[in-house]
Image (cartoon, rainbow, N blue to C red; front, side, top):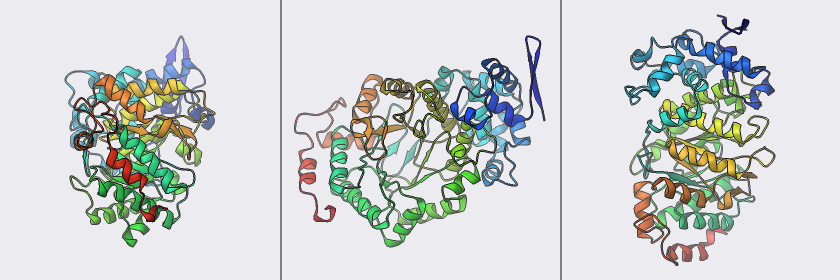
Length: 462
């Protein structure tokens, strides 16, 4: 079906819904690289105007990627809840935007009735403040060894990466993060190598720290899902199963995964019974541009492909999902403005689809961005109710070679917005003297027992 609109007497035509969505997307270098972006701001505005008039039902009737050739499209259609959709079925994209911003909208039961394409479409006609206001109302709570996503809370992933996976270097990063109140979302290591023995060593390192000090958090070594599955068979202490995911079957194939594999990994992890408060145990990371970099986008714009990845995540009831927003580089998100917009879009779309969204607020050193841009996105996501952010020593990941957010950034956001860690983790921080009752850093020498442990590392860590 073709779509069209007229502006100042000039007719603008769009061949199909996929083309209309791409042309309506806010400025994005990824879409220019793919050759699908609007040719001018006028064409972009006209496309957004035409998109606002598209009925939401059209996204069910006209899949952007045929389900016959893509298992993600099949998943989206098979899981669509017609009863939950009924309340908004008669609306256009523009009417849906107005309804979302109204006081009468009830978002609590809506997510199952939405498809990723619907939420991507409505985000394209929203200002940043719209994305923030609506996402703030979407509260998604998950549990494993603590409770994440509660109102007034902000969690952090403690990310102590090391370029050679040196256990002592990683241990130093863990200690640093814990003493600044970081790590309630997860203590998660990106391994420099996916070698089984190496990953197993890191898993035992994390498990030893968490067990010895009864820290109410979970661990993860962000290896490929097949590595985690092999290590679970070996009896390794796997808490969360990690995997990077994308929004098309072909892109996921480039990651070496499919839906059946993820389901098998989830079943294996659940059988271990390592959660104490809940059984949300999958951890997914995404990023705009991943489908394009794999030449697997099917002509769909980067932001809509990203939203489709959230359908994959939603299928597995994850504890954590985060968009690694600026990690792929300026070829996909060129500058600070594009990174900020993408971060807000991803958080909005994920939350509206019912996901516990976090964000790696980051950029590569060759992007036209700096830490001040990240401060803006950090603050906006805090206002928008982001579940968690990254905590990295000095905000500089020395293994992955990109810039993110630091332990101090989390302290800043918690203080200026009155946010607190996960309740169980907060109680542990106070017990250890790391935080005061007002969630400020404790007295000098707090966490002395932790420090002594890290000085006297067990022999198996060397």
